Length: 153
Image 1: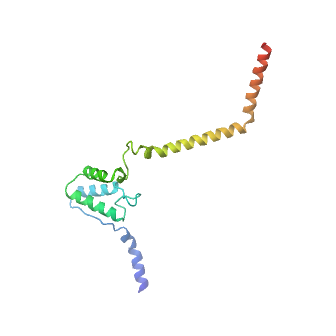
Image 2: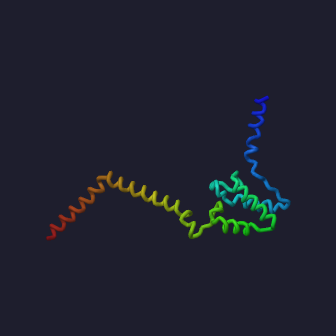
Image 3: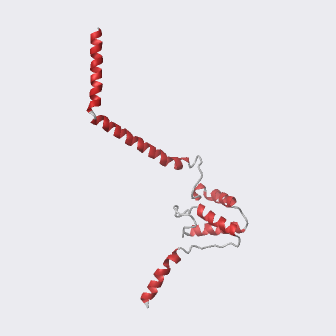
């Protein structure tokens, strides 16, 4: 009996884990707007999940608030504006490119570029140190120039 109950619980555990309060609208456009908004807004507690994916209480409150605002007839733009006014651009899962967020957007590319330039410089230095012929050619050219200057005098 206990074994059967354990198997039953294990089989339905994934369903319970994904049972984040699913809200349904009569209007399919409102449902689509709700799904889009909850996928665009970041959970402020989890920070790496949208409010649609998060089980945090704050995410549930934000989902409820989005639901109520859509029920009142507010547009997606109005809801996003309300959320960003209240929580800042951080509430957006993909924040816009602005002067404030520019470093966040461009920083990784800048560090990658600096790293590649550093690797290129190190490889070039090692090649120059390992290639004695390049150093010898410079020395021979200097000696020839000095000899030519000595012959001209």
